[in-house]
Image (cartoon, rainbow, N blue to C red; front, side, top):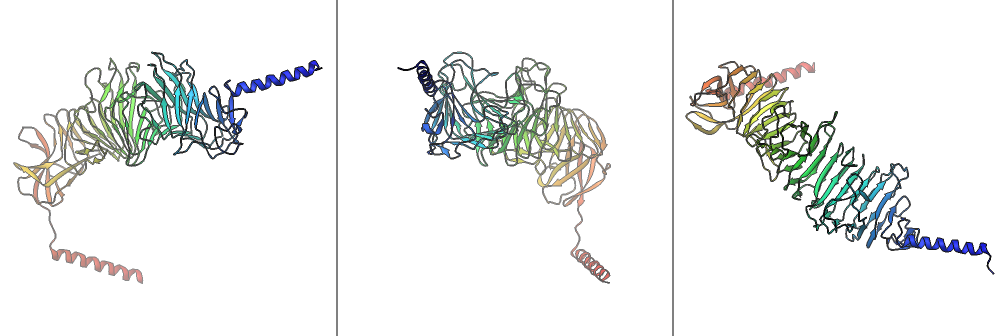
Length: 610
């Protein structure tokens, strides 16, 4: 006869076995990879702890410090969540480097998500990499499928892929959303400071195409904070997804390689609602070309104290083309001030600058910095909505070249060119006042190929730049102008750059005049080049070292400068008038010069040999 204690022991054992069975067969549990079976198969129960079964549909699969770093064959699995590293962000244990699937055999991981939608403030976590001491890179080749079963007709389901460790997380498979309702789908990529999430795969065509949102770099929509980088290394990683960028540091980086083109064609706006410290880009094209071909880049918040706005960077050899421009979201509070910084050693193009709001009390400032060339290719909207610039807006060129290639592209903002490497060029109209300060250069001309991102420098190319509100050029600044003695002449007037000031004054505070001849033809009497037309305005000052009538040699010709030449239209020009051919030494003169030089060299050698 069994005693009561024996019966109790058997009952406890039975209960424990039943509990473990239930956990393995669908109860919510964390199942940890051990790799004990040695075959690197997800489907082998011996590779998991507890090893009663592989992770089930309600389980979290954990890959921590003790597993195999060899590629794991995934097959087709369904779980609730996938976690690397540790159970918390503050854990100091170091995770192993795992690889799920291979480039040839992906496998599929399907996430069975709660039927109740997560929110932007509290997304349902599906993939996370935790632990402050982690430095390993976790790579997932497996295709990722999200299916909550939510068929609601309103709202948006929110899920997150989080890397708060010091390591990196790479997603190289296809991301699929199988939700069939009209609610839409939001996937947040949350990279911690010092870490990177890399998207190296693709996004499949979705049932709710146009309703899929990718959010990069924030904890909650209501409270953006510092984040790490999200890197796009595949040209199709953002296909069919609406892109939203939040946060106050880090970057959304594009690095698909030289010669590649990444098109953002979701049909939605490219939302940009974060800030950056100076020279720390929010969007960075590291290689290749990125084109926002459908929708535009919308900025959505004003600058907090101590932050310097939004940074768009193209690295050397890279190109960022914002075809449809940059604008202010309608949700921005009235009276906001925002700086858009065009930065980097590469090139970029910006279409229309606009304001989507119903009032135009906002101030958007444009700043060009870095050694690359950026072009403004479309006229700024001038009606409301669309008045990008308020009366206090500014455009500042601090480095590299800004080309104004559309009439009124800078709105009515005052334009300042400051810094020894800063150049303002273009071939259309600038409506605001233009000021050259601290070494800045004004150079009419230039061109930009919006397909390839190739730029033609305004220095060395001829064009007309129209200034509708005057020009001030301080001492130490430069007007860089090109003439072409081999070009066509009409009634004596030759082909040259022209700064056409239609209104306002021209103030030359001893600025430098730099002129180069693109030809090599000796001219004739009566031929001249107009450089600056100041229409009905006034002229104050002269160029440094060039008084009225002073002579200057350029190429094969000597010219005199006339600050008040009357043109056929009755307006006044600063012109270069031909005087004579530049003196060319006779052969005997060259021989005497070289002979004297050699004698001097011989004398010095003898002197120092003593």
